[in-house]
Length: 387
Image (cartoon, rainbow, N blue to C red; front, side):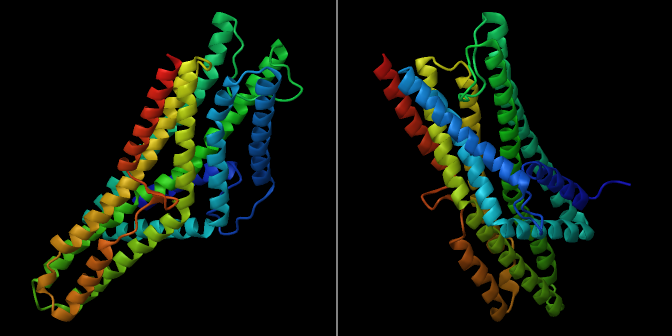
């Protein structure tokens, strides 16, 4: 027996929740409470901050090497992102639970209707899985590259290089044993951190990438509506479907509102720390102090553009929803009193909610372009200065 679309969606949700459960942050569990694993993750994050501060003290104060500030700062942004996602997940977990329940109900309900409804569900599942696979490979390549490069330098050039740019008090990085201990610790921290960030990012992608599904389904609803409204003999059925479409728009607005409330702060931290990490990484490349910097630069840039693209996805979905209601709906065949529902939907669609980064800037590719221009200007200034 073929697997149902709803089961496929539930399986994707289960995979993402497993990633979060490993990090003690399965906030979609209705009985979730912070427990020992959550506190271990928090302890690991603050341990990283403390070790980074110690690294800055050793590099700047004891050794007089100011470039260590750039190296140590590159990955701090990822730790800040992880802590921010954990904080908002714990404090606003009820929003994630609500969105998960809404999407599961949509997949379960509209799969039963079959036809075009089921086709739209299958299409969205494929897009979601493709997006998750792309981001999964980004994290895998990042971890493998950052771990492999120090080993390559150690074997080929006999040069001791670290995976992450932090030291631990009491461990001598220049000794063979101390270097191997740091490599092992860094590999564990990097792998666990990438796993946690991947799980948190996938829940974001899961909810946002499925928002256009509601737009696709309303287009199918409008086709059914048009077939009824032109008959002029099935008014009760027509009116019932009209109210269903109106309720559907309200559900769309509620989802948008929940996403904006949940992701507003996360997006601000994500974009600001990604840009800071990119600037520090570019500086390391120009100065020539961290061989793995190009790898981390590609990762940071990928994250920045991907998150901005999600904002664009929401913006396009809003426009398509409004266009579908106005252009694909034979609202002019309705009595005047029923046309008021269409007017309400169109009026709301003119000022639809958009994802933003802390209410500072909209989340879109236009924002990504502006940030890229700023990064480019800084890079050229630094390059000219070093020349």
